[in-house]
Amino acid sequence: MDVYDEFYKILNQMGLNRISVLAVPQMHFGEALTENTGAANWLLSMQEIGNDICLHGFYHKVKKVNGGVLSQIIGNFYTNKEGEFFNLDALQAREKLSKGLEIFNNIGLFPKGFTPPAWLISKDALSEVRNFGFDYITTYNGVNLLRKNIAIKAPVLVLSSRGVLRRFLSKNWLNIADNSLKNVEILRFALHPIDLVHKDIRNKIITTFKRLAETRTPITYQDLLEIK
Image 1 (cartoon, rainbow, N blue to C red):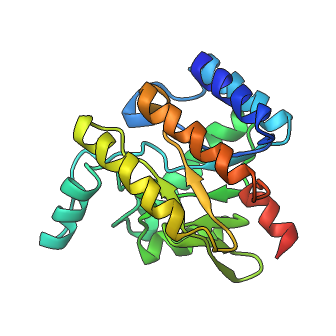
Image 2 (tube, rainbow, N blue to C red; image 1 turned 90 degrees about the vertical axis):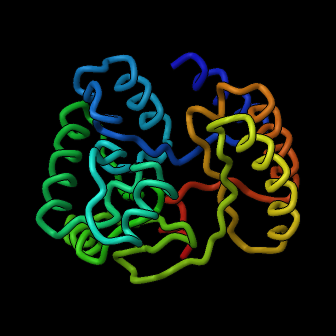
């Protein structure tokens, strides 16, 4: 977790002291957080200093994409099998949410919100998120405050770091998107762990953050509950 700590210190130096951390209970069918003490302790330290912990799926991946042609295109190509909650039924969603919260609670994490992997979620799964009492859920288009029944439009800046071509296109797209969204009230910036590995992407993120910090006040998803 050294790269995360280092980057978090850089954010602190820019005045970004609190963030929303999206955490996966058992990333890509690997080691669960209950067994990964390094990751668990880092998340606990983030929670203890006031950061917002958000449940982010369970595996963040599916072994097989079910459904018709459209589901196959979205599941296999658009998300690379990362859209875990995209076509779950109610029972499947309930089991994943329950198991995810159990793992989190066992290590002392108490998430207030949920973000489906790839920002894709079925209607049945969304109903289950509501039933579990989460305060908010995020989508590609914004944030839904579930208890208040308020939908907030909040575009997101996000990069794709898988492959040289994706990184090149992402950096150029970020310039265009950042400029076109400069007047929106709430603007989100989504980071993935792989973004911090590549120096060119990492430097682009830092440069963008510095520019955004000049005119915007950083908040977490949880902060929106008090503002709206």
